[in-house]
Every structure is written in C-alpha cells, then in structure tokens.
Image 1 (tube, helix red, strand yellow):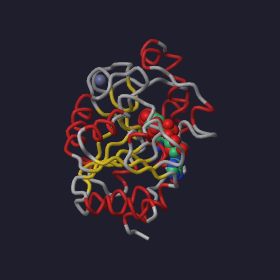
Image 2: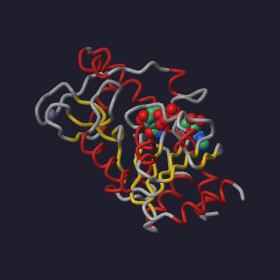
Image 3: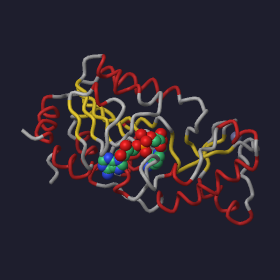
Length: 249
Ligand code: NAD
Ligand code: ZN
C-alpha cells in the first residue's frame, strides 16, 4: 500500500477532519514560502510589531515590502491543493481549515469564511489598531505609492493602520485561537500541510490533536519538527498528492 492509499483510507474513516496549512500550500500558486531557498527570509529580515509601532521608518519599510509581495499575492489563484481541501470541506468530511497563511486563497477556493481560521490574519485588507475598523488596502497603497504618505485611520485619525496580519511580537488573535482549539479538540484526523511546524503557538495545534486522540498526518516536501509524532508522514508535493488522495484526479 502506498502512502497516498493510506491517506485515502484515513480520510475515508474520518468524520471531523481538521486541515492545518502553512505557506507551502500556496507555493504552487506562485507565492514563495518563508523558509525554502529563495523564500522570503532569504531576502528580508522580519519587522517586529514593536518596531512597527514605534518607528515611522519601520512602517514605511513595511508598506514598501507590502507593495513588493502584493505583486504575487494579488495575481495568485488557488491551486490543486487548495481545491482538494475545499472539496473535503464541501463534502462535510472536514470541519475547518486552520491556516497560518495570510493570502486568502482558501476562501477564494470555495471554503466558506466561517470555516477558515486565520491564525496570522489576512494581508488582503487593513485595519486600524486603535478603533478596529476595516480599511481597503487600495486606500492605503495609493497615497503611499505616490510619495510614501503613511496612512491614517479615516474613522479615528490613528496613525496605527496595518494590514490585518499578525506580526512577530504581536499578540495572537484570541477568537481565532479559541476556535482553532475547539475544532482541534473535536478532530478525529488532523492533517498538517505545507508547514515547517516551527512557528508557535500555531504549531501547537497538531500536537494538541494527537494528544487528544486524533490521528495525525503531515504532508510536506521536507521533514518537519513534528514528524516523530505523526501516524503518517508524506514527504511529497502538495497539489498532486492531495488531489490523488481526495480523488480529484
Ligand atoms: P514555512 O516557509 O516555514 O514552511 C513551508 C514548508 O512548506 C516548508 O517546509 C517547505 O518545504 C514546504 N513546501 C513548500 N512548497 C511545497 C510544496 N509545493 N509541496 C510540499 N511542501 C512544500 O511556512 P509556515 O510553516 O507557514 O510558517 C511561516 C509563516 O509565514 C506563517 O506564519 C505564515 O503566516 C507566513 N507566510 C504566509 C504566506 C502565505 O500566506 N502564502 C507565505 C509566506 C509566509
Ligand atoms: Zn481607527
């Protein structure tokens, strides 16, 4: 029996699958991950939340990078991996997608908003850190492109307007963490896909599922930190592997 056959079996025996994704699920859509060669960390050092808050120059650098990364994110389309995941949700096999990604591709692939739990937020719109209101990305990027004007919140005037993402050093979103825990504890099969599983607290969910009695599967091109705890590890490409396991080929 191949590992894909084994994954197909695990999926067919399960009723409350939780899918957990990292940057690797979106590389086939043309968005680079962080830790592969040529990934984001090869080019940029992260900007920590405290620096964003305390320095206008850090905020300018953040928006400059956003303009760069948007060149890939705005044209990216869901790939076979996203579609296989969306089909597990629409068939009622999977209850939720917990994602570390900020690209919104799970929603575009057809997973309903309420079934996507975004642990690190979403970079396709902005929010005000003071009043919480939502601000269209375009309304921020247009003036910034012109002369690097930093945004101000149209509702409360705050200068702390940021993409709706969670930066290093920024508190995790409470409601998403709570929902992620709830679905993880109800899962009978937990499938971690395209994540190096080194960023915490996100990487705590696969172990939480396993310790709570769920089967744990890891699908990633290279070894991860949590392979030793998994019932099944597939070191393979996500799109072809997942579409074969879900029967979309
Ligand atoms: P990571 O870069 O640490 O790990 C990605 C993993 O996916 C790597 O181990 C890599 O080998 C594997 N991978 C890449 N393409 C693959 C493919 N086609 N098939 C199989 N495996 C593949 O990413 P992470 O664990 O998500 O952690 C990094 C952080 O970066 C996350 O918190 C996330 O918020 C952020 N991020 C998001 C995006 C996005 O939204 N698309 C992109 C880059 C980074
Ligand atoms: Zn505001």
